[in-house]
Length: 378
Figure 1 (cartoon, rainbow, N blue to C red):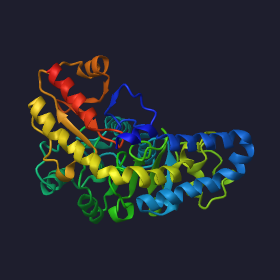
Figure 2: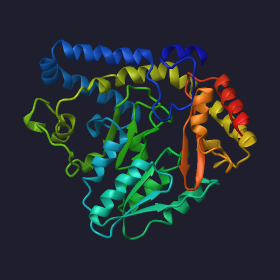
Figure 3: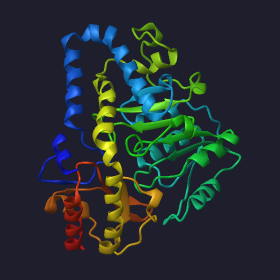
Figure 4: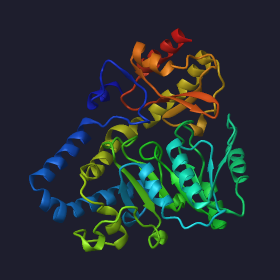
């Protein structure tokens, strides 16, 4: 794994354990990104009006094959927050209806749902999922206790951000379908992290960030919209749409693809990002996961706190672990300023969690550096 670090521009003098937040784009993909930007700048008018759409379609096709859906069901956004916000503002719910989510969801989207719900009289319910999580059945049963006759939408992460848990959401989606409840999956951390087939998953909406574990350039994300919803999901920003230069193939795509002038070069790197992933990242994905599982026992030993899961299928290439109550409140700054370790600390439900991320450029030395630093601080 160590020689793969040469493919990344990360500072060699730092210990980078925060791929889950922003990650790092490998040089071959970065070069592809810059290649598209140069093509754009050689003849911007011809490229944006005549050439872009065929290349965008190639990216949709490559991505649809990778995530298991039809290319006509994919639209590109700069991040999952923007993608989900667009779905939120397309919903036609009544006052008193409910949105159900877990209490492990991403903070920015909790806020987005909350503001929209308050403005529309819709209640946003965060079902408490206690930790440590014991079993899939316990998780599903506990979550489903939050469903009422007023539940119209379930919004749920497949991989959570603060707690870094892989939720078994398939059975929840299946049960929701029988009740006529829409399912919106926050899969920001999913592409390139765990295998996914959206059609098999069966959700109505799914968003994923390609600039995280698939290592595409920053600002490369997508939204899957099941074809049966294309007639009512509309963009927040209307531009030329069918009256513009995008040749199709559907008014749904035309409305979303052109949102005014923007550099779409990052989306054109998707085929190269997938190629790099298959060649360099996927073969080492399980190695990264095993290294991350070692963090669980090391965290437990050094921090003296209880893990939030038993590992196993709950953990991928990220793991969050509670810090002890007496940990310095500025421990993140200490780790960075004194040890040059980049790692996030989250305040979640009364816990302070430290979250490690392992990507192909990490090695055991990175783990040892963190553990030695924590031991000296605590």
